[in-house]
Amino acid sequence: MPEVSVDNALLSRRGVLKVGLGTSALLATAGLTASLSGCSASSSARGFSVLRSSDLAFLRALIPVMLAGSVATAAMPEAVKDTLNRLDDNLNHLSPALLTLTQQLFDVLAMPITRGPLTGVWGRWENADAQQIRHFLQRWQNSSLSLLKMGHGSLVQLLMMSWYESPQAWAACGYPGPPKI
Image (cartoon, rainbow, N blue to C red; front, side, top):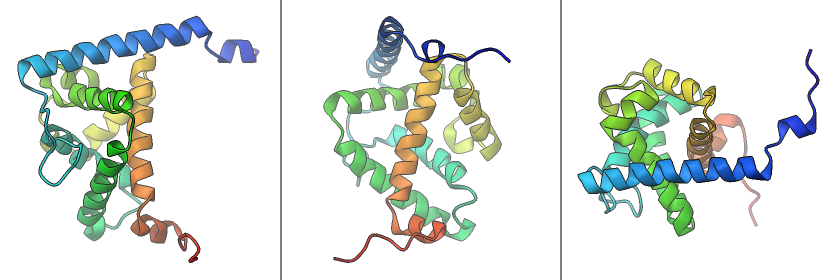
């Protein structure tokens, strides 16, 4: 078995800067392309503060796959709606820089020209089945490209954080909720 050291496991400062610059350049290019081509909506969807219509199509396909096994099929529509509302609220409280990066990630996932090659989902998100979405998530999680791994981590953290804020999630995992004061 190869020896694992802390030096090998951690990125150097230069490596972190390179990844950050590469990520920023890719997302900025994709965001600029989306805004210039008219693919990126600048206004939020009706009933939301931050989330746009193009974001909702992707998220409504992704959330049920991520919550599968922890939410009953009958309760899934309400869980998706609640998660979207909490996600919107969480995004509304991000710093402008982080919000811009998140919206650029959503733009990359929404644009057909980038969605197909990066996710393997060549059609619209609304038409993607659960297996295609699981494959996309697994592909990004196990990618050799750190940019895709970071995108996967961001998506999972944002959605799981938004889901587990819900009392519906607490009941599903046996958490009685915060103490009453």
